[in-house]
Length: 426
Image (cartoon, rainbow, N blue to C red; front, side, top):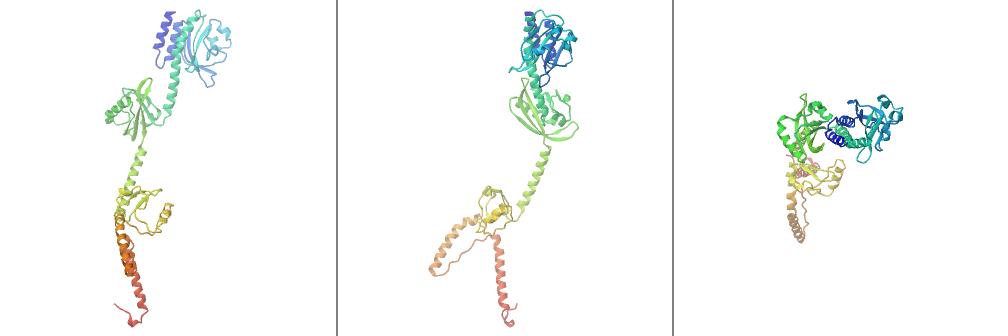
């Protein structure tokens, strides 16, 4: 018995890779000296059918198949406990086609449960002769059951990983510590034009230009140390087509070893949009700065977002001084504020206002003091005081012309009422 247990321990430690279930079933049959060894798991969500993950018959691995769970000895094992029929299996289950066709006389199986105790399947042995050592069967099956359970849980995790990995819309490339490609997803195949089999095992850059190899390998080392990395490049598909790609590398543990998952995204459309946006911004800036009128751009909160050079010349303020200001930067005369409110509502508005620039406002206090002294002096002399309004430089010429026109019109009207011989002629 000790020799059988030692062989079982060696067998489960050697069972690795994609054929782990086949190896376990084959070794189980050899160690127990039986005709059949098998591992089965649930095949449907309702748990009414089982799938033979591995079936060793007379020393050969047979293809997987499914069978109904009802009316089988497996139904007494799954989700329950070890069960053994030392003899009389065909008499116990006369309606079972598999047992009848294979001439099974004895049966022993052990349940497979996950860490939470949920049933996964079973591992068992069948023989055309009676089983003469039930204790050995149970001990060997229990050892193999631990390894089969771990393989099933790993397989379930691998299935979940594969489902998520394949569903991601971005290109995914998984590389190991030596920079070899371990896995790629369908999005990578579509983006690169290369099938998965062609990419696996490669240690070069499959889409980014070769001159980036040294830089990307250095980033790979940083990612293995736990740092997330990112780079952009002009990539090439297998057919030679160029496109812009953004690649991010994140460190992950895969099968207990450090790897880096590279996530690639085609940013060609984004790059084109950025070029158009920059061109539009440059065009806007050229027009904005070339305008001879003072332009002030405010957002919905009345904050100044931008001003042009004409505004700086008119107001005396530098652009950096007024950005973000919500108050008027030049004094607005009575009646001007409603115009700003109408403009904020999207309505056209031209408020009439007198404005004072930065230099005017700095000189305003001194002029006000002089006017106050002048008014007091005029009052003492019995003369009416005169007020002088502040008019921006760009309106003074227009207003002088308007006053001159009104005076000329007044003189012309007076002359037209005089007799013809008394009118003035040039």
